[in-house]
Length: 129
Image (tube, rainbow, N blue to C red; front, side, top):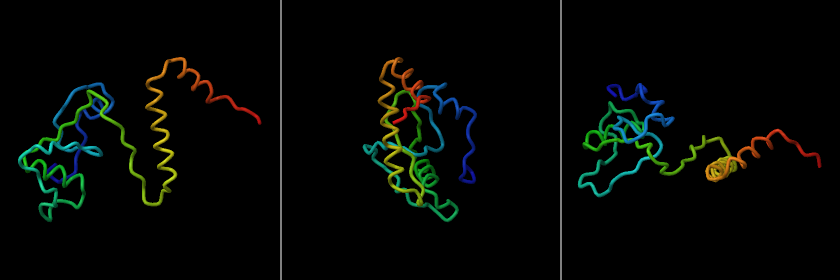
């Protein structure tokens, strides 16, 4: 992170896709962060100096590192789900559709294989009304 932008590590895809499971220290965490507020010293998360880009994720990584707070990614459990943020020009109804689709995906993980087969087959059926 010398120039404040990261290069994917060799095990990035293995961590992302669950081939390597556990908790691992990483230089940067993106999208969802849990902070242990029981720590006696928490970083300010302000841009430390002019050399650090005005990028919230990079500021997070630099200031937490400087405060000796580890960034750790854990993929051993499903801790929750995050809908990716919308671009400025995207309508709110598209965000609601994303949330609905995510709910269906989560619910379907707990259903039988028969249901998954039904859904796959029904994708190709049309009904004339």
